[in-house]
Length: 306
Ligand SMILES: NC(=O)c1ccc[n+]([C@@H]2O[C@H](COP(=O)([O-])OP(=O)(O)OC[C@H]3O[C@@H](n4cnc5c(N)ncnc54)[C@H](O)[C@@H]3O)[C@@H](O)[C@H]2O)c1
Image (spheres, rainbow, N blue to C red):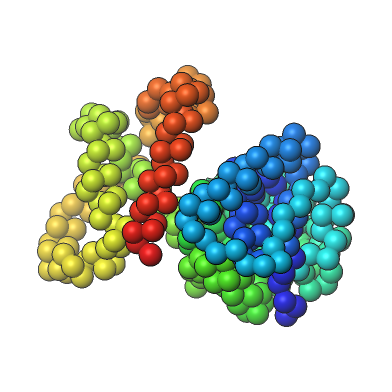
């Protein structure tokens, strides 16, 4: 396995710039590439903001790191030890881009995908060397959430998985490697199970959106960051859990479709912060203020937990 020092990130939307800032801070020479010149230009500001968050987290700067922006794919990939794709979540697009990348990089360059849940085995199926492809799933915002899921596909070489685990440790993040590939991996499966129940309670009129958020924030939300689910089971007692679960599990939502409220809002163009309204309303100023407030709170919580 070659040492990993040069990283190329494809896609500079929500995720790419923050990932680049974290890797550069840890001493990596990072090149960011996007097909869209405007997105690449915007990424300069986003990466700088992410770097400001790293300052507030007091993240140490490892020497030798750098961040470059490149609009030519072949130039961006030249000499890369690892390529990380963070392009839109569409299987055919990812397959097509990975095939193109494979034709431009060295034989032993690792190819990682930040996919939120597309099976790595499928993504790598048509490549000449699927052994070098691995899932490396960052959580949003990538400069703040210090955990990456690592997902080996059926044909991923164990040394490739190990290399990405080592890289994750080098940036000071916790690597969490799945033993088996499942859609949505672990983080999003848990999140979507929570979202399904929350939306079912709102859909059924048990509680309104504000009340739901308040209950989860100060109930399980705050607590889970300190006592995560399996540890919480031990804390609560398995006798209590099995007794409650024996009647409650059958009553929880197992809806296979999507929440009617979420679909109605989406169809009305109420997509959330980016559209000015979703469940709640936002102005450009309040959205910006909220983003800053949340970043500050996440910095505080992370410092308190580490
Ligand atoms: N947004 C999240 O919260 C989040 C969290 C974890 C993982 N992810 C995953 O990360 C990936 C990227 O998500 P995002 O939210 O940053 O997407 P995004 O839509 O914000 O950005 C994607 C970027 O990729 C660019 N792009 C499109 N085709 C390209 C190509 N062929 N080559 C290079 N660039 C290309 C687009 O111009 C855009 O700038 C997805 O697989 C997503 O599922 C997203």
